[in-house]
Image 1 (cartoon, rainbow, N blue to C red):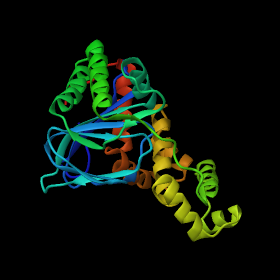
Image 2: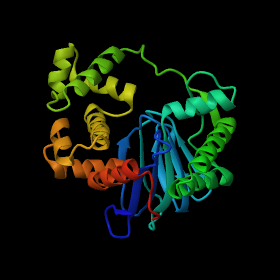
Image 3: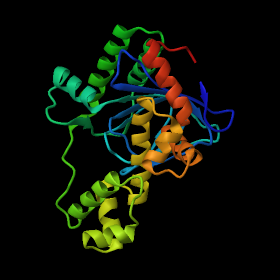
Image 4: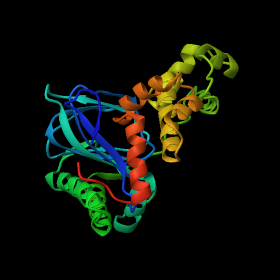
Length: 287
């Protein structure tokens, strides 16, 4: 496992070649805190020991063993230890297409499927998450795929819903969307909040409020998250971390390392090494 922070902390973030639309993370964190960020796909996690405090728009989920945390696509959240000893957990990151394909095949949900609850005590589902990890680590693709489908179908049956479209008709929503597009397009050299507001014909505080309402975080936080997402795709494609850092506007590789490790949970070099092993050999070593 790759070291992440203090020596008592460890983490592996990887992808099983036979399930290319699923990310996997096993980790033990004590001092590590995840800043506000979001995922393009979904998050399904469970703890094997300790307590994790997950900060979500609706409040904080205090997750312990037997609890399953369910976070929908693009929902901003934070995470940190809920007890001094930290937490040990296994997390799955299925792409949106995985959730929606399973929903279409095995449930009556139609539209964009998701979860109405962020945390629920469900020891059976918690075991299924760890069993998906175990099957993937053993290279048992049929078992990993089957267990994932059973898990998602169970969670959708108990906690699933059709997700409402993001509100986009409030005052300032159009400016927020235009600001996001500008930041994404000019990620390497982004404008200041004042310059961006002037460009859009609004005020900086009005733009800040609108952006936070639309995307759950201020522009500078969203930009850091977006940069890390793009770096992940570049690392997956084989780009060196230093080159990826420069391409998205981080000042240098240490700057990238700091933000990438905080958001993803492992350093970019360790992340890329795990991806290289997965894609080249299709197998993983046990932790």
